[in-house]
Image 1 (spheres, rainbow, N blue to C red):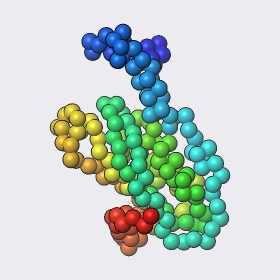
Image 2: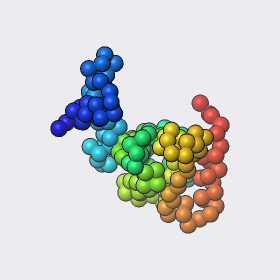
Image 3: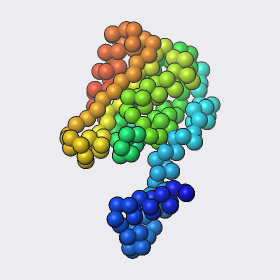
Image 4: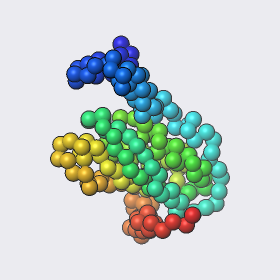
Length: 187
C-alpha cells in the first residue's frame, strides 16, 4: 500500500467521504506533503555541504541566528516549528552560511524530538568543520502541546547543545547567549 492509499484509508477511518469534492485529491496532497516534511531522510550531510568549506584564519564566533525550521514530532506526527541559532568558532575552516540553514532543514525534515535535533545540528557542524566549539539553541512551539493534551498555546520549548569551548568556557558561552538574545536587525 502506498502513502496515498494510506491517507485515503485514514480519511475513511475517521468517517470522511473520500469522494467528497474537497477530499478527492487530499490523499495525494497529504502524501506529497508528508514526503516533503520527511525529505531529510533522503539527504546526506556531505551532499548538503557540497564542498562549501573554506580555509580561513577567522577565530571569533560565527553566529547564524533566527533560522526558521518546521518539523514533525515523532510522538504525535504533529508539527513543531521555531528558530535555530547556531554558532561555531572556526579552527582554520569556515562553512558557507547557507549550508548551516540547509543542515538545520536536513534534520528538521525528519520525524523528530527537539532535543535530538538540536544535538544533531551541532554534531554535524562538528563533523564537517572540526571547530573549536559549536553552540546550537532551538526555540520551538509544539502543536502536540498547543492543540491537544494540555492545550498551552503560549508555551515555548528551548533546547541547547554545546561542544568544545562553548561547553568549557563560561565567558564564551555567555557571549553566544548574549549574541542570540540581541534581537536588533541590521538589515
